[in-house]
Image (tube, rainbow, N blue to C red; front, side, top):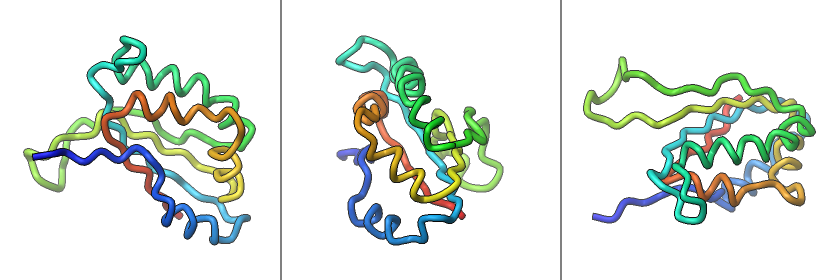
Length: 127
C-alpha cells in the first residue's frame, strides 16, 4: 500500500485562499511529520526543519508573523488510540492573508528546505 505524502500547496485551495479579504488576520496550523533522514544533507528531518526555520525566520519577521505554538503532541484524548501523532505542530498567526501570501511568494523563501525535511504535512487555515 502506497502512502500519500502532502508537502506541496494545493493550487486550487491556494487560489481560493487568495480570494479572501486581504486585510483579515489568519492563523495557520502546520502538522509536521519528519523524514527519518534527508538524503540531500544527511541530517534527520527534524534537524533539517530547524535549518528551514532559521532560513525562514526573516520572511516570518517581514510578514509580521507571530509563532503562537511550536511543540510536540503528547497524546490523543479524543480520537483513535492507535492513530500516530504528528512529530510537531506549528501554529502561526498572520495579520492578514496578504502577509501570508507575500511571504510564501517572496523571492528566496526556503520552501525547498521545508519540503526536503518533511515526510508528510498539513497546512490548515483557521480564522
